[in-house]
Length: 222
Image (cartoon, rainbow, N blue to C red; front, top):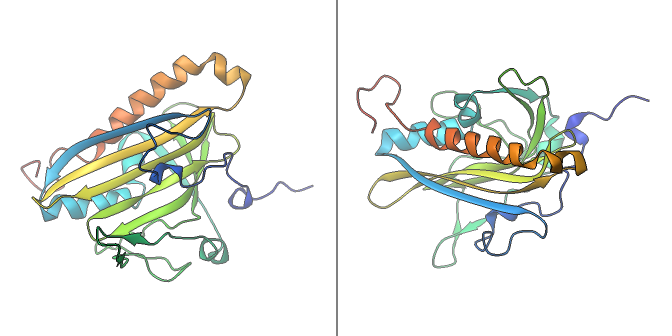
């Protein structure tokens, strides 16, 4: 019997979209360990455009030393996914700034194709021989907040979800927010949990630094 294509395989946890919860750090999904980090990565329109474009095209992962292999996904699969509607402080819906029609490939001003809900990828750490599969479970597409979250698939050493959101505040500062919840997949992984936590901390640090520093072609960090 042929193996099920990876884009058809369901994620390995139930709380899909849980990284959007405002009380994640206080009330994570039962049995999962939450994580939240927020760091300023620069200032101004150039930093903002660079940061959200990189984020929405797997740039954070690649800049952190991960090799990302995109899995071809039929248009109907991404068209069937749901992009939640965001609301402003007054309760009014926030119009999407980037994402087009369901299933449509959207490009940044630079011509870079942007990821979509339902996209699936395999990631590999350095010389680590195993590929880590994940799926984009939602996209944030607001005028001053853009990013995405991916959920784990079978073959990932952990179960859970991780979100990468770029925010622009009223003073022009640009921030990267990482939110996640995770747990080891099985007894053998539990034994190696301290190592897994160490690797998570290392890569979270790399993620937070990935969009900082001088901009391409610029002489200053902002």
